[in-house]
Image 1: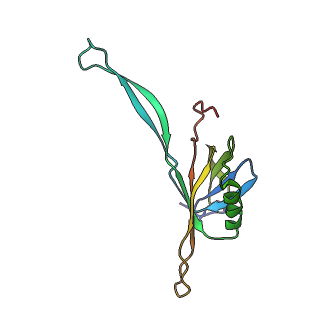
Image 2: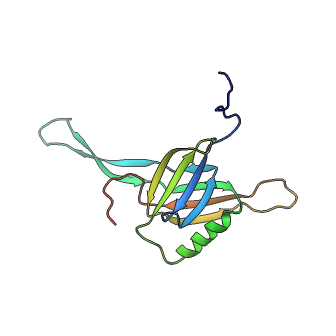
Image 3: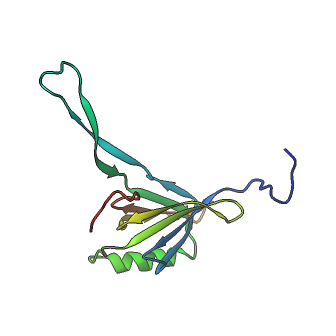
Length: 151
């Protein structure tokens, strides 16, 4: 493949995270885990149909989302959002996670319904080690599909 001005070498995707319609822009994150959905299966068996059965999608179940990045100046914004949620969970808010390509263009986004922080941590600090301090933020939420959630 020829290299031209549109070729990106050695650059990685990143994730932009915004909460509550832009009130809290939590910045870029290098890793997002838990963007998944699972449907609990409901099945029905009639008494006179032998082994025959019908399958129906049950309720949806979403995993908590775990965001990871190197601690940076945006960590202050995370602290502000955490403080605003301490003992006072906000309802009917949305969060948006946008996958950005190496050229800083959006690829795909997920709108998270009612995100709530459930854990924040930063790696231990050691002056003698040349390690990057990693910040992690875990979010519980009501999903990212438009599947009829009513708050």
